[in-house]
Image (cartoon, rainbow, N blue to C red; front, side):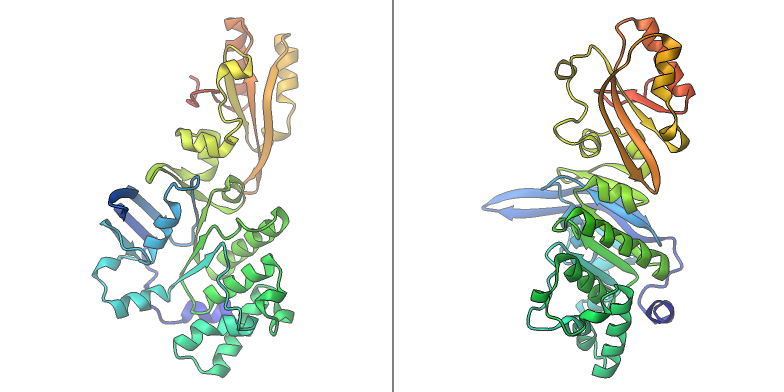
Length: 357
């Protein structure tokens, strides 16, 4: 099978180092109508072998430019990109093409060849690499099995749904046995149900093939569903990075808070919430299923004003968040915060986001 044979195939990457991708002081500037636009500003990032790593930011943050520098489709103005210890800036064009064969890429727009059927699209990169037609078709059929599209071999892109097109694009990206898979807004054009199926497929590919996957998105739900680590990009700068669960529980940057809570309800100004002071609480693991607030009301003998509530799947765990208005009595408010912490909840300031001592 493909995922058995691919692990033994010769390639430029040696696979011995833990960090597959090292980005150091990466800066990218563009000239636009005589003006200089800084798309990336001093990015430092390390992605380990086997990670499903998310890079998230709002539109125009620079995340798509960043992912295109990983395979040197965009050459940085300053800084460096190392793939398994190899500095891409030191490679000649032929070596760079060989390196790119180890870095698959899928896009929001699928980028399929309309004049080719499904199997023809998957065979295309193999033909370019010099595979025989017979061997290319054998590999393509293995990949069709992996993405569950065996019955669509002779169909053309115009006959496929969006989710099916993306599965073909994933199969094509895997054709040359890459060690890294870059996904640039790969689910943004899909409905929620199809997005979930594509996320599950990427997770399966990561587990079966051991491929390092980098997901570029503006959807926090994608990050929390499938990624282990995340980097948050804002105006070309890396403003926060780390384990997804930790950042969800205790976001430090304004960009992280906005992406987690949504632009219209992000750590909303106190006057808008009609509360003098607010806190954000995060339910983790077992606490998500316990009546913590009901118990707090009974214990304190005071009502609690719930201003916002939501529950998300973060790394396969039920994680809930709430914005609460604190009681006006400072002593009662302090007792409430202490009780919530004792119950195992993360408690942060509802406006500033910092953890409350």
